[in-house]
Image (cartoon, rainbow, N blue to C red):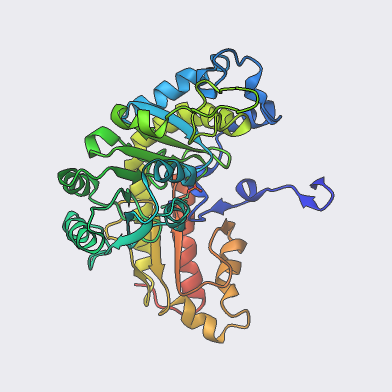
Length: 392
Ligand SMILES: *Cc1c(COP(=O)(O)O)cnc(C)c1O
């Protein structure tokens, strides 16, 4: 079946158990799917936009209420929707960073954080990870001192991942924020792998900004996300325009500079809003997701030559695994080479592992049912067994 021309319809989520590391938390709810159809037209949320003409003031559909609920849910004072977590990083960097200012990221930061700092003219320095692949308060303090010596001023901002994309490790945000506070450096929490799947409270973590990704972890269409701030920072990041046309004398009221006025004007926002009640409920059941992640990690670890590179026992659904001593050994002599592994998974209705990769790879068990978890765990063990890899 085609959407049009050469564009196939997509049926991955209908036909397969998808353990793709970046897709699991963004899978739409049935409610969001309905909103996608109803609000697919451009500017579809603008039917009832009235003075002062800004997205977050619209009452019908209840966009204004959604903004207030988002802020409260994240334990922050103000929230805006943004086209992806990266646009949240960009807004914060654009507000605070001047050319040549040092900004701290981490050894586990995502490329979008680097690009946001680059765009603002800042200079990135990374907080090193420790031997356990964690970002610690101690390394943060040391890096602040080092950067202050190098630049003769402290870092302008610290961006830190609540959960990083490489290992799925949960980092000591409270400790890091406590250190940052001693130096008066604002902290941005990158919640791309936490907001929408785990409970997140920015105030109790002690951060100034919380950024989330709608399409990564909030069961929302792309590109969508959230930027929430403390009251103190809101006036800075969400400052309104002072622009004035020299010929026409026009001014533009309360449009916010970093938000380019309005952000998500249709299907993305309505998808986020439609999924929000389910998302609020699902974060309360994170323990179930952790239990599922542990079942699959245990199955993989029972396969000789396989090591889980993420923290064990698992405390997140995103996991990095090394199968150089198991599935990659099979790949050396298999007629399909490394592709045998993804093929065998696909035969069993499982997708999301990059075809050809049998060395170090990642998977995400978020959102699977009990039965699906058992099937995935059994499938890894079966594939090992059928290819002569001992299973303990
Ligand atoms: C996916 C990801 C991002 C980017 O999120 P977008 O919403 O696509 O901009 C940023 N940081 C981390 C850690 C991520 O995993």
